[in-house]
Structure formats: structure tokens, C-alpha cells
Amino acid sequence: MQTAISILDDTIKVVRIDQGAITLLSSLAIGDGVDPVTALANAPLPRPLGPTCVVLSHPDLLLRPMVQPPAPPERMERIVRFELQGLAQGDDLLYDWHIPATGGMGDMRILALIGKRSLVQDISAALAQHGGRLTGLMLPGEAAFHVYRRLAGEHLDDHAIIFDLGLAQSQCTIVMGGELLFIRAGSTGAQAIFEDIAALRGLSLNDARDTALALGATPPQDLQEIIQRHAANHASAINNHLRFARAQFRLEELQPSAAYLSGIGGQMSGFAAALGTRLSMPCRLLNPFAGLANHLDHEDIDQEARLPSPWTAAIGGAAADGFLLNAVRQVHDERRTFWCTSGALRSAAAITAVLLTLTYAMLFWRDMRHSAVLGVLTDDGGLLPEAQARLTERDLLVAELNDARQRVAFLDAIHLPQRLNVQLLNVIAELQDPRTNPIFLTDFSVERKQLGAVEVTLVGFAQDGVGTSAGAVLDSFKTRLQERYPAMGRPIELPVSVTTARQAFHWVIEIPDRHL
Image (cartoon, rainbow, N blue to C red):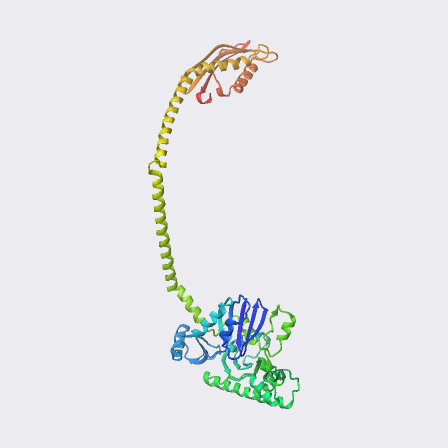
């Protein structure tokens, strides 16, 4: 989204273009004798403006044509600045330059734009009051050229004149090979025509203006003569600009084939035809609205779209995809250079100083906190002495607990075989059944063979039960014994004598203390 503001004659025009569509057209009148920059600061503009290009014709903006031998861009930059230093006269000036791509060999043609830094600062401050940021400051002639170049797809002439006739001034832009070659402002505009009509008909200046702009296809003879006379004067001025450009740039081959007219002055009936006749070339109307969509009310766009249009400069600035001569470019370059060199170092130094200050403050705060916490911990009745006393109490309790555990473990080790003897005998007794599970013990012992384990010895035999063999009875007894007493694990079976009537067994079972 780009906003452009043109300050020409007695009007401020605001145009905003977003994605190829006009979203804002606003026109504000300036009082007589009011400084345009002051008017810009005090005007009721839409907020926020955002990135804004200003199109302005001002005494503090000067365009100077130059011819220099070919040189690389870096060297040409120094040459242009050196040539223009004599114009400073104590003022702080800003420079920008453009080399038209006219082709051919020999010297380079240069357009140099000189502007006072104070003017750029004042315009930036005025835009800042409306939430705007100055991105470009261009001449009306360049803005008209951007409209011309945008319409180049409509087969516009490569060598042409763009003539904008405003109220107080005229702007003549010369195009060669489709490139901007020369710009020159004229000191007279359509106001001179209105004044002659007012004097002839005895009208006020406003009535004369309305009369001139409302003329039909065949205006009265006396008014037609005034229009034709002024058209001839402007054609003579355009030819003078052409001769000056040919001589200054040494381009005898500069021969425009068409003229393009814009501005409110061109809306007078017969002016375009008279200008084309005097220039001996076709005079066409430049339509700045062509190729742009609009998001405005139809009434607004119909009211403003009359050709030739006074909106050419404002729309050209808003629709431009770049600047050829931008009085703000040097400011942007200086800012970029500053932040890439000394500005970055100053910022780094400032950040380092802030970080050091914050570090010192943090360390000081930590020391203060440490001292306060240390006082709370170590003073009489503080947390540390209390914690040490409680730690001593805890150590005493832990020692007493360990002694008690050792005594309990000793007593348990002594009484464990007896306790295990009773438990196992109870389980075996519950599992014995003379009919279904005839198991008989001939020897049973529980002994502590090593520290941390108890050895159980079971010796006996199994007989056939009701419908069950002795072997099956013994297997069932072993399985059920492990289920009822899981701590015993799998028994070690020692060899025994085998008989047909019964199934003998001799088991040794080791049970760790941790399972009991």
C-alpha cells in the first residue's frame, strides 16, 4: 500500500493505491499565501498515512542537467557531488542523480536533483503528525513520467513530450527512448487564461474559471482566441525546452513524435488541438486512471476522472514502483550507513553499558540478598543452628533405629527355624488326606546352614490314592505346597529307593531370609 500527496497550485491531493486499486482520492484547498509544508502539517489528512511519497514543486528543489565522461557508479557519485557543491552557499543540501538510458556512445547525460535538507526535515515532521513516513520526494514531472511508463503497454511513443498544465505552473517532461530525459517547470499556468477571460468578460476570477472549463465543442470566438494564444505561448515554451535539452545533452536526434497533455488547464475546449497544431505533432490526453481498479463510489470517480486529469502527479507518485530522482534517497543512505557503521558501534556500546549496569545491579542485589539470608541462617536462633540441632537429633534417632533393627534381626534369626517349622508343618497337615492325598513324612528338619538362608529337609513317601497313582499324588502335593508357601521355591530332589507300593521322596529346600 502506497500513499502519495501532491502539493501543487492551491490544492493538496491525496491518493492511496493498494494492490493496483485506488482506495482513496482526497482533495484539500490551500489558502492564498500559505506555505505548502505548513498547509500539509495542518491539513485534515486521513490517519495513519503510512509510507508516503510527496510530489512537490518547490524553490528548494532544483533540477540540474549535466554531461560527464563515462565513469563507474561510485566515481560518478563523487563527481556529481563535487560539481554540485558550488550550489550549496552554506545550505545543507541533499543530492540524487539519474542517468537516462538514451543509448549511443560518448558522454553520459545526467539529471541531478538538489534539495535542501531543511525542506525534507519539515516535510517529514509534517507527515509524522498524521502517522506518515516520508519515503520519497519527487518532482511533478517525474510523477507524470511514471504514469506514461505504466501505460507504455498501450504503444505510447518512445520519443514524447508530457505537458501538465496546472493553475499556477506548467510541467514539461521530455521522454527519449522510453526513458526520462529532461524536466522543466514553467512559471505560467491556466490561471493566466482565466485572468484574460475575466478581464475580457468582466467576470470574477472564479466565474471566469468555471466559464472556461464549461465551454462546449465550439466556444465563442473571443474565448477561442484567448485559448489559442495561450496554447501558442506554451508550445513556444515547450520548443524552447526541447532546444535547451538538445543543446545541453548534445542530442540533435531528439525529435518527439507526440505530446501528452494532463492538468486542469488542458480541460478547456480547443486547448489540446491548438497545442498539437503549434507543436506540429498529435496531442493526446494522458489518462492516469487507466490500468487501475478503483474501490471508490462511482459518483466520486466519475467526478474526478475528467480528462485531462489534475490527478496525474498524485496518481503517478502513488503508482510508481520506484524513484528515479528522490530527494530523500541520500537521507535513507545516510541512515543505512550510520546503522551499518558508527550507529551499530554506538548501539553496541550503549547496550554493553546497559548490560554492565544491569549486571552490577544484579550482583549488588544478590550480595544484599545473600547477606540478609546469611543473617537469617547463622544468627542466634536462626535457621541454620536450629537445623543443625534437628540434624543431631535425627542422627541419634537413626542410630537407635539401626540398633533396634539389628536386635530384631538377631532375634528373628534365632527364632526363624522354629517359626518356619510350625508354618510348614501346618501347611503339610492341611494338604494331607489319607484317601485322596496320602502323604507321609518320615523325617522333617529346619536348620540354618548359612547366614541369610534356612534349609528345610523333607523325607517321606506317597501312596496310591483313590483313583490316583502314588506319583500323581506326590506331584500334586509338591505343586500345592509351592502354591500355599511360595517362599520355598523349587525343592532339590535327592535320590531315594524305589518301591512298587509307594513313591518315596527326599527334598532339600533352601529359603532365603528376604522371602520370609
